[in-house]
Amino acid sequence: DLKGKKVLISAGGTREAIDPVRFIGNRSSGKQGVAIAVEARNRGAEVSLILANSNISDVAGIETIRVETAQQMHNALKERMPDCDVLVMSAAVADAKPATSSSEKIKKKEFNSIELIANADILAELSSSANDSQLIVGFAAETSNIEESGRAKLKAKELDFIYVNDVSNGAIFASDLSAGYLISSEGKSTHIEQTSKAKVARIILDNVVSRLSYANG
Ligand code: CTP
Image 1 (cartoon, rainbow, N blue to C red):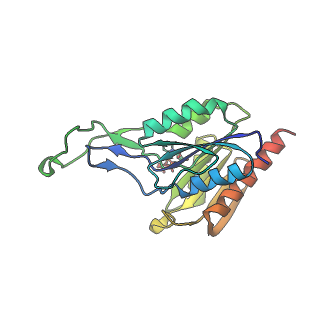
Image 2: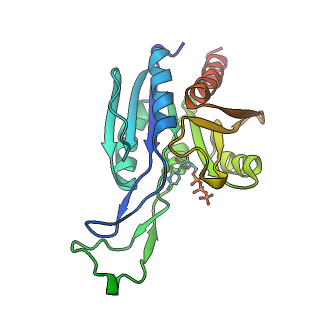
Image 3: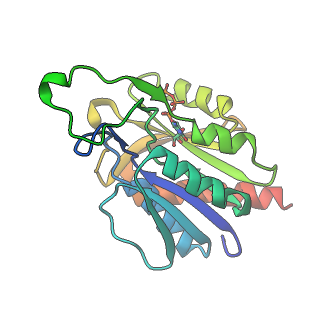
């Protein structure tokens, strides 16, 4: 049911270099995004996966572009966005990066503070320049007020759907399981009890497919 559709997916967690040895990163494994890529491929879509710092191997039938930083992810997505029917932004993008990255390893006696500058919000930017027929799914990781924060982000970033992960206690990172809410721009919220990331992928794409078929009459 996704035959003929181009699905662009980001996954994993970006890293921002402090020096040649250290980076600012996060605990995303890329598993959820890869599960969505596999499910989209199985449903007949042409899939491009922009994968940041994940140790998951390439999957047959999925174009995989490996990136490290938020800027590299941004560039790879921007290039492919005009062509895609669906964007799924499951990557954990670093909100900020060191103002300067040292080419030499910083010695510990000088390693006291890091000045940060903000990274662009890739999803908000791609969403604001998307056309009406493109469908956009965002993600959010929350530790409290999960559903409410998800709704606020869906609205602020003008998304069609958002999947809000419950990450309290570091749950879900690198796990094969996930729990959260899938919220649609039409106001529907579906609570997903702890289940496999493969099942979450199926639920998300079921919703995407019904929205696409509704849009096509
Ligand atoms: N995202 C992005 N670019 C960023 C940060 C986030 O594209 N620089 C995307 C993520 O891929 C995800 C969504 O935005 O799909 C939600 O990210 P999140 O960090 O939860 O939201 P923020 O708006 O940054 O809010 P918060 O203040 O809670 O961090």
